[in-house]
Each structure stands twice: as C-alpha cells, then as structure tokens.
Length: 113
Image (tube, rainbow, N blue to C red; front, top):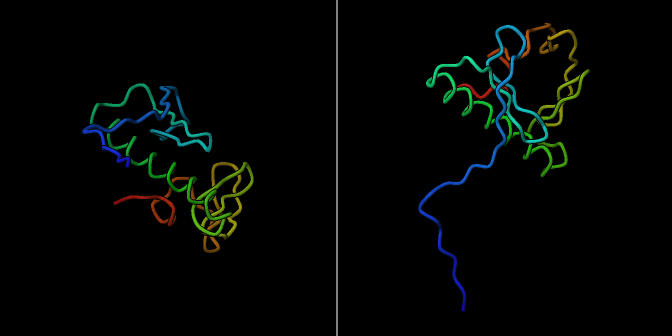
C-alpha cells in the first residue's frame, strides 16, 4: 500500500526573465511557459505582474488540454479565446468590432481580479 505526502512548500519552476518589453508592458507570458518581466519593477509590481502572467500560463495549458475549446492561445496575426479567433496586428486586437490595444482590461482573457 502506498500513499503520497504533500510537501509543506510550493515549488514553482516557471522560468522568469527580466528584459525590456514594449513601452507600457510590465510582463509577458509566453506559450513556452516562460515569463518576461521588466527589470525595473518594484517588488510589489513584480509580485502582481507575476501573478497576472501565471494566470495566462494556466490559460495556455487549458487551451492545450481542451484542444482549443477553452483557454488562450495566440500567434502573430490572431488570438484564440475559448474557441473563437480574434484578429491581431500592430499591437492591437479586433474585439467586438473595435481595435483595442493588447492587454486591454475589456478582453475576457485578461485576468484582472
């Protein structure tokens, strides 16, 4: 008979790189499981930005697990959210008939809570 013990600590192996992003972008989650953060973030900004970008990583995982029916994926020319495709170009995404800046709070995949 075997059993598993849950360790009393969390291990997070998410690769985080500090690099300059586009103006106004504090962080970016990549489909390969990495996160890019601006190097000049305060400790509070870094904590908040990491939590936000990790939510995107979970959205990418969900997309893969559900064969694109749920979750988030993207390419240079589009974003996929819960099975629906949205055009993307020049730092903007066409959503509900309007072109909006990437990262806009009105996008349903932007996990602001």
